[in-house]
Image (cartoon, rainbow, N blue to C red; front, top):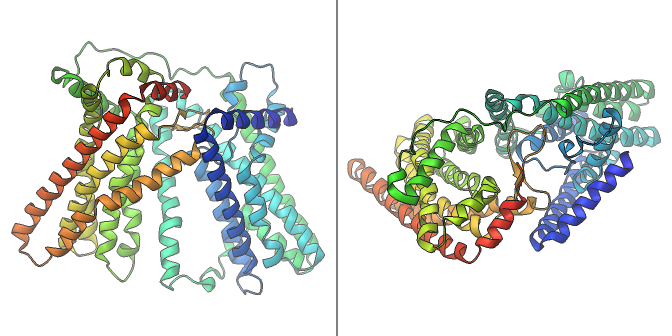
Length: 529
């Protein structure tokens, strides 16, 4: 069964690569990043040799890797390209062989291999002697297996929450505190280390509690074997294996329930005989009203707005928590906030799925397409403008520089216009199908399109930053002007500039979409929810 599912995964990946040039490019990009990750991780662990805190740092790195496997399948849903169990639910397969096969399919891939190769850096940085190297290899394999198992357990267990509307809301909002912790480790910790506050010695003694976590057990088993305590090392590895087995048993139970529980989330709800609020204003009004309803009722949309606020706070964390209150960090947070508003909504075709084909029938020309994109932008701006402006002023007040809030708010308004313009253009020129997988609360890029999704993030960030430059220059050059005059003029000018850029994006996207509607419909058909 395991070998059969591994072959199935390889065949699905090969078919995806033959489907389009975009899929091939995405696979190549993803593989390159996996190779770079493996090299970087191996180097970081290898240079710890001779460091007095090598054991503590290795335990921290192992824990961060496990945390990444816990977070990334929830946030991006494509770390290992695991087969979707829902596609196998109708086959007469027993749960335990199916679980074994799914684990094997999870291991087969570029990223799991990259984790193994990267973590093997402990054979140079921490292990000493033949016994130490042998235990290090076993510890790395058990660490990766533990990471994959806990990732499968968490995502599959969430499937039960997704059976109802309230469950979807809860499952989606559970992502927010996890994402806050993720941003803390990826934003705050590196910056504190760069300031010199966080050094290798800072981790001395952290193993007093970290050593009892599964990743800590793996790291300390290597140290024990290197110091001649082979029996203690074997005991730690046995405990790690036992924890992994227990997690695997819990995952099998969750998988068994998910495969036999009826999914009622797609059943029709109560329909109210009420017209859309802005329907009398034509296509633009109808699209605006529909997207506004989605932003209020769709848990995923609510999570996107919450994550935007978290990202802005995380970008400003170094200035808020550090001794140096840098105004530029608050401005950078405004750019990030605007960029992620655009990125989260940069693929309307993939997010809509097959219903987009019905929408396309009502969009025969440039005028209707302009109304379509403009309606989406209006609905998003109604929420994004007050959110970004309020957070910009709040962050500026926290660091004790309220005047910076004016510049940050202006940059947020200008950047939002640029982000919405890029969102529309990318949605037409670089669309990608989205899929829902069992046990995940949010949609993800279809297999073979992860590189496109990653490129959308990078393009949104760089493009929004470039389009925000006029607002940044205006804010810096007018710093000495009276606040009573500067604030309203700067905000109004930034809003007008953002509006012009957003409208230019609408026109460009509409012109490009006229000749690409058949291709966009094909992308929509590949989306599966």
